[in-house]
Length: 575
Image 1 (cartoon, rainbow, N blue to C red):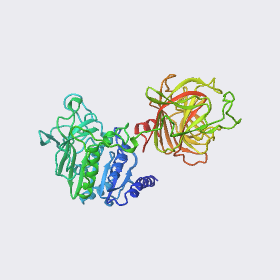
Image 2 (image 1 turned 90 degrees about the vertical axis):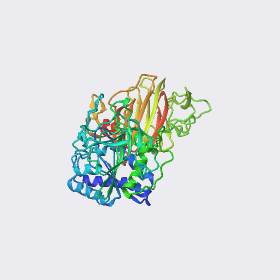
Image 3 (image 1 turned 180 degrees about the horizontal axis):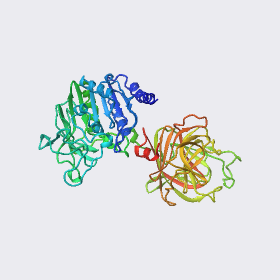
Image 4 (image 1 turned 45 degrees about the vertical axis):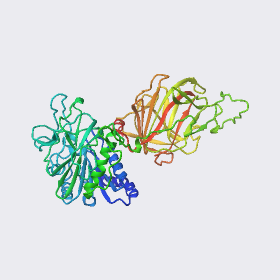
């Protein structure tokens, strides 16, 4: 069953590339799926896939292995079907037949590009060490460098027994046999120096150029045979734990007939997403795209970008996932209003007619329940709360990070004068207005209520799987419990809201039928397998902001597309 699931996943990932780039001439295989506790393969592989597709000359197939610790018996790529393999893998060794086929593929002319954490893999596989030239710490379980802040840093598993330490010093290439393993200084901007101006990958590059917010792997060890160092990097010694020498960050290896490109660039930690600066600086992107073409064909047809970085200027391109879209302007142009049935206590002007028991309807807001105002140069959404109502986005959204800030006002209205101040943010809203209480659409709710921020409520039929326990009379989100189907009201695991009158930050991360709620940066709720009232997967929908008998302000309402949950959030939510 594992093999079937992996195959289906890979097929889904590959199809957009095949469709979009039917005329692409280079078949590329991206291998990913495992990393140590310091790296986020989901972020790195998403960025790699995006950058290769953006080049317009690659047809990318992405294979994700089984998770770390599980069997790799079914991992048997057909290496020979591809012009180049891009390795974004840091994990356990493959089975012998897969390893042998991989070695034969490279030896007989296959191309290989390995990136950053991949050079930590397979320290005890001789042929792999020969293929990559030099490597880092060693497999996922071995990457635990002990770095000193004074003197010569200590390092990880690969050391002088694997081969020399290769670096540039005073303009000369040095192969140093002194003891020590790999290390790196903290992630930072650092200076790259082009060493081979005639190689197709680096042709046209300036002598010095800046790398953005990345790790500079230092003191790589290995056989270092048949290598050609194209670019080195030098970190600021004043920032600590830095090498005193110019360390290789991009080099090639000739292995049999195969062309190998080894780049140490492209770090992404658990807190990072695919829009991390390290994955989107133009030095990284250009060497990835050009390096992959050269590994596959021996030539480079891609021109050097006009905005390639210089010695004084960084250059970054971000993926669409990093672009925030503002959803709040003075005219509420991205929204429509739906007013519910007014409470009997609400007073209207004599010339306004209210039909008892019926909602006021779309964009009928005689009491000005929803309005905007300017405060310290910021646009504020002000909700009086006098009538139960919903501010509904005109667009439907899928796979996103929604963020906004809110604070409570002072007023409360019937029928909640003696209750907590209440509002709410609804997502995956669908169907007709008024499905719930004659006001809101069928949806999932991020509860906004005094001392109950981030609670989860299903409105008008949906269900989802959540982890929860019963604590007295309340059902509470509990990451240590098994998933169970849920509908109704589920309390968050902590109450993290701020005092009355202060701004709270609300975050909702949504991927398909899964969601994570945060309040003021703390994970308080997670759910998966959301379904509508008919049992169909609930993967997208409109947004609604509730007016619910309490005065409340919202600001900084913005949304951005994401491809996956940030790894650290996913880990904390146990999704």
